[in-house]
Each structure stands twice: as C-alpha cells, then as structure tokens.
Image (cartoon, rainbow, N blue to C red):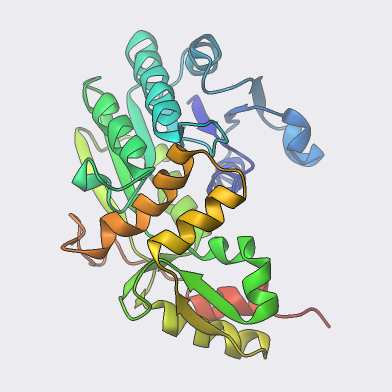
Length: 289
C-alpha cells in the first residue's frame, strides 16, 4: 500500500508518519525540506522534495498511491486563500490523474460555511475541489489546536491570552496528535468509500477564559484571557508587515465563527478525542525542572 503524507514534519503529519511506520508501512513523504526529517525516519520512508504549489511535484509524489493525507501548509504568500485554492487544485488533479482511491483532508471547523471565514475559505475551496474528483474523501473539520499556544510566547510570558473571539464562547480545542491518530486509522482502512465529514473536537469545548485558567494551573503562572477588537488586531498585524489579504484572512477566521455558527458534525463519540488540555499543558507548557 502506497500512502502519501504531506506536511510530514508538522504537529499532525509527524504523528501520522510515526504511526504508519509502526504499522509496517513505508510512507511517501512530500515536503519542502527533507533536512527537517529526523535521520532515523529518513531511512524508513520515500521522499519527494518540493512544494505543493508545484503540480508536477504533487503528481510525482502521488503516482501509484492508494491513499493521500493532504494538508494545505502554512504560507507567507500575500494572498493565502488564493495559494490554498491553487494547492487544492493541484491535489485534485493528482487524485484524478493518478487514480488515488482515498484522501484524508485536514480541514477546519468553519469550512462548512464555504465563505466569510477568512483563511478557512481556502480550505473550503479545497474540499470542493477534492469532492469533484469522485474519489473517496474524508474531510476532518478540526477544532482549535492546543499547539497554537506554543506560538504565543509573549502571552505565556506576560500572562495575557489575547483573542478576537469572545472569551466566554466555548469552542472545540484539540491535541494535533489525536488528529493524527484518526488520520492514520482512515489511511490504513480500505472499508470506507464516498464523501464524509468528521469533526475532531477534542474532549471538551473550552472558552478562552477556561483555557487561561488551565494554563495557569499547569505552569504555576497567572494567566487571564483578554478580548481584542478586530480593529486592534488589524493594526497589530499590519504593523508586523502583513498584507491586507493576510490580515483579513486571519481576522476572518474569528469574525466568521463568532455569530450563528454550529458545526456540521456535532460532538459525538466519533468527534470527541481523548487528550485533555490539562494533560497537554503539563507536558508541553510546564517549566522544566
């Protein structure tokens, strides 16, 4: 079985690669920089180095593949939605031209709205492109990653978790490793077919106020949640050098989910994953002795 994994050094992809190796599979990894792979992994996988923006690279990586894990990688391009739409088109062409039978796509909560959710609109476009291939596709509508907290060193240092979301609005928070578990199970399974949507919601919906309290207990440092207006966030992003489309793409991910949004796939035994934020924070945020 040839299984192709994109973004294999990311929080989700690295988990998928490890589990596939433990299952006895030699996966094909599509990534920009093979030097980022651990040497112990590099000798057990097949590597195609290049960008997912290059359709010839994607075609070469997926030739003969039975299953594909597709992730639209982070981009610093001035128009992230356009970039992700282009990458989605490359994925769809490779699926059709190479006859890939099963695709697991890492999407996001909010993609079901199809528009008005900032950068998530690019994921919605990729969903639609993959759907039109006629292959069997699973769209994983993932919640807010625990690991996003690792990208807030100022918040952890200053004790203020800032967000454009209402700080008392519950939302799904999830450990990326748990997403990787679901991805791997679906890539290895050959018994499913058709188009499917599955939420990945973590064990509990959490408000930012609750998240700040959990992080505070785990680290022993006081932390509070603070709401930031769209205008203040816009000023901050622009002052950091982001383009207008990059800025609005980030803001839209919050503004598009603030009002009248209900996940298409609600919380259930299938969408609830086990790792709690408390356990993750103790492992990843607690100061080392």
